[in-house]
Length: 274
Image 1: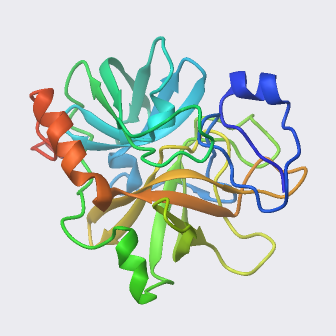
Image 2: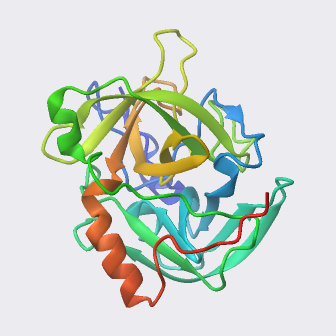
């Protein structure tokens, strides 16, 4: 296995140095995209709440969770410099929104490749338009403790704007894929795992997908239950078919407290045009 750092500046320093087998992808570099996923086409699907984040060091993905609030990974908001968010209207055209401020969870250490508390927030300068809709947040369950009873194999959706395997030519296209829950990948660190089918063409995440949402869909409601963090990868590959995510339920209090300090509600009414 090799370590795949996420941001370009990290790549320049490390040159994708080989590490021991089964090494986790670090959360302190570039993100990962939805490998072998399908382009999102449903205007009432993941398009409504999934956004592209332009950072000083590359791109990430995030989820709208309030009228002007985006949930993403802490490593996607830990650099100094200019940020910009782009969401998709119902025709899948990008709409740019300036960023007002960002916050990484205080427990996140960007110097630690396997850092816990990899959760961040972005407040944009103006509310998202009528074509956007916040994803729901979990009110119970779905934390790391949820896996203690062995409840794995539940179908979830990952979404991201990252590249496909071995190419950067399609960066910025929203893709989605079905995956299933698996046991926590790093016991004690709060990382939960995802897996696809057993075929050689199973989906995963790639460069640009870090911070992206892990959705549970119930009817027309999308609940963001996880934030994509990284995964494991084989030599010579840029993507991972075994992504890991940070369960959102374990960070609800911090999300709400931060939003309150910014004087913006979590959730809230964003007009949804049918």
